[in-house]
Image (cartoon, chains in turn red, blue):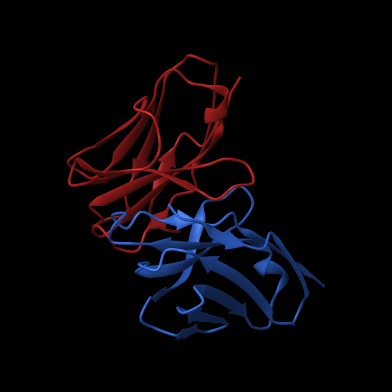
Length: 112
Length: 112
C-alpha cells in the first residue's frame, strides 16, 4: 500500500472523446507525476506537477494536459482520444521533486 | 530519454538466486531504481541506489552498480514463487527533472 489512489480503475471510451483521470497523493507528498504504460512496455513519463505548476513534460502532445490542486491531488486530461491512447495510466507521488516516487495501481483506459 | 535495456524474460527454480540485469546509457544518471509490477497492479518500489554507490543490500535484495560499464543488476536471494512478476529498471537525472526513464521490464517466472 503506497497511499496513492487512482480513479477510476477501468474506463472504456471511443475515439475522439475526452477523458479525465484522477489521482490522490500520499499524505505529505507535494509532487505528482503521470506515466503511460502501453501493453508490454515500460512506463513513459507524461508530465510532473510540483506545487500546482507543471515543471516537466515528456514527449506527449498538448492534448495531454493536467492539473494539480491545493491538496496536491491531480488530474490527467486527454482530449481527442486515439486508439493508441489505450494503456495503463500510472500516477506517482513524491515528497518533493527528485524524491522517491510511489505509484498507484493505475487506471486501465481502453479506446474503441 | 536515453535507452534503458533489460533482458525480457528470466526463469528460475524456487530457492535459487535470481539476477536481473540492466544497462543504461545516460552517464549523468543520479539515481537508479528497481520496481516490481504484479499482474493488474501498479509499480512497487523495491530498492534504489545513488550513482556514487557500488552496492546496496536490503534483506534478500542486492543491487550492484558498475558505473564504468553503465550496468545495474538486482539479485534476489532464495527466490520464492511470490517473486514472480515484471521487474523494471529505471534511471533519473537532474537534467530531466528526475522523471523516471524505464526499461521495458524483465518478466521473472519462479517455478516450484
